[in-house]
Image (cartoon, rainbow, N blue to C red; front, side):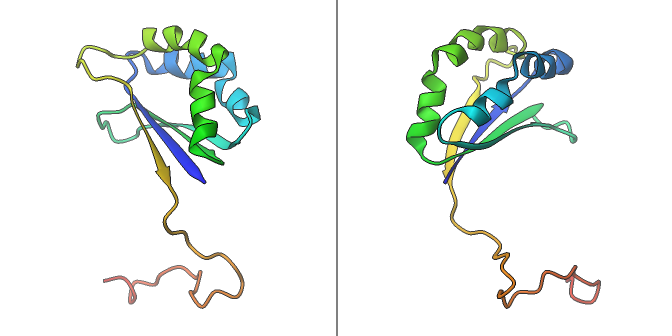
Length: 121
């Protein structure tokens, strides 16, 4: 599995979120071959990015096909129009592969119970 992470800085937060909603960008991505899931996250701490777009893909090639999809390419101009470009930073995207995950099987020797104050350093 590959996870794509796209960091965005919106000039107008509502305009960016409306663009994603009005065009059904995440729903379309989820229907795209190789896409397992896609989410739009809004920052709550005032960091440099106002939003992250995170999606899980079967392969890096599947993500690349999404990037090159004519529908997505046509929409990229509208996306660029709602981004803050005053800092001169480009849209930053990256691909990551899963290295480790929490084993969630019932046979796991690791407890899934919440940590008690005594266990927390």
